[in-house]
Image (cartoon, rainbow, N blue to C red; front, side, top):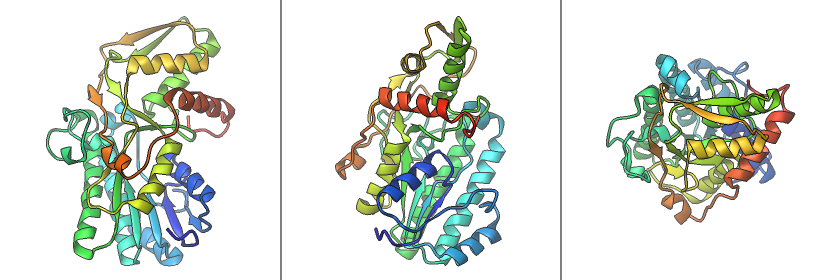
Length: 313
């Protein structure tokens, strides 16, 4: 990767995009480009093409997406499908027209079947039914993967895709109506600790198992893949280990100093029973995560508390 090349990070203010920006900047990339959604609506095809014509990026990291937790995905499936497909098609088509050399498309582990064999291998894609609560978002991301593969087949460009597991860290969305499990728990437990609440109630049974990767590790993996991987298949990015939601609750409670009781509302959905990625492809290329769950949660709690004025909540 040429550190002096124009590199566009789509979604540079989001959880993943901001981490990729920080990592590339610290790795010597001198010409990073980003636009907030208020200045560039990637759902607007003409505006997206004009932006590419103006900036002429050599590399693109496509981290822009409409994202949310179970509640948001289940409530607004049309929005998640339509917005994400339009963003992806516009960016990838513009990148192709303007000769972008290298594209990294970022998806989500929800692309895999609900009951895929664990740990989930990359070749599990399109082998079974999706989790119904976020199938619309998953279909959009699958479309992005196939779009990248199609460009490779038709034009021979070295574009690639990466599928991260559950991500968390600085810059996350802590809005209880639209956040994922980790930031939702951090906010809920921090507020409970501050209020001295005797009980915190979480959705579901707490039995599902999930894998969590700190977003700074994800950013490091992105650069690693851009410099060391060139293949048609999407690459899983994760830690290769998982915990139950109950165990996660204990880690979060300890990080915020909550000492009350923890209860579970089993009338609410659990989602997929287990979602652990097979990361042998990534590890075989020479990359390993560096941030433990306990350390990552602790530093995320610190960031959450010190960024009350500018965090998403």
